[in-house]
Image 1 (cartoon, helix red, strand yellow):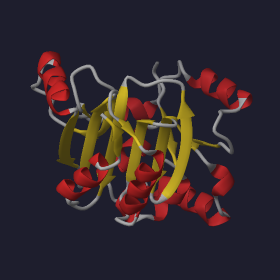
Image 2 (cartoon, one colour; image 1 turned 180 degrees about the vertical axis):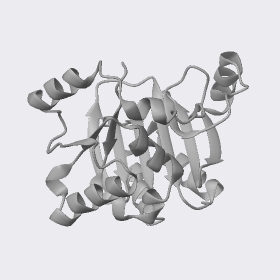
Image 3 (cartoon, one colour; image 1 turned 180 degrees about the horizontal axis):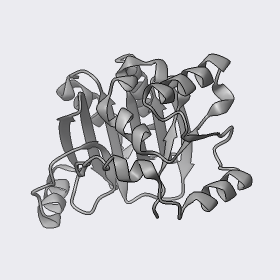
Image 4 (cartoon, one colour; image 1 turned 45 degrees about the vertical axis):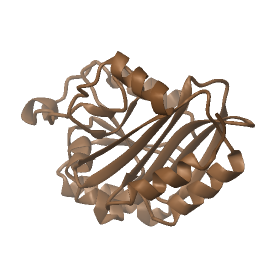
Length: 235
């Protein structure tokens, strides 16, 4: 593929945490198509802000698609498909930014959010640590953000009510994002919280529970972990 698609929430363009962030800027600068997602929640000024910001980045000619649902529309997909093989002048003028490897809580595990140096732990070491204490914790820092992540083995189910109370306490810290897939006594719960906006879902199965928090300020990891582990009901 010679064409890049960047998905953006236009409401973030007016937030200095985003519009001054190097990676946020780079992604929009190299995009051949910008998809403004969750457009059903936009006010007119949000669309104007995105248009103005793209002009400020000297990318006023970049195609912008507004998507009003969780699923991309057929006509939008067809338009993107027609662009896939078009090599752009912008691509040759401006090299792609060098992206660091995404952080991972274990080798071969699901990729998480923050850039990080590659893990030095082997799969065997990770599994041994998980077996010994029932969970693995990892924190990382980069690009002005801090991440805190946990993997909890499948033998330890969490109380749905207690875990939701924990999420509410994290929400009060005004973190940038919390994402999780958690094995609870009531089933497998998926959580996606961005800037305090919480979305819950269900999943058919999970090999373990995974939680990660991203914040633009340091948090008390010991307190967070103690409160999280208190949500465990079955060991």
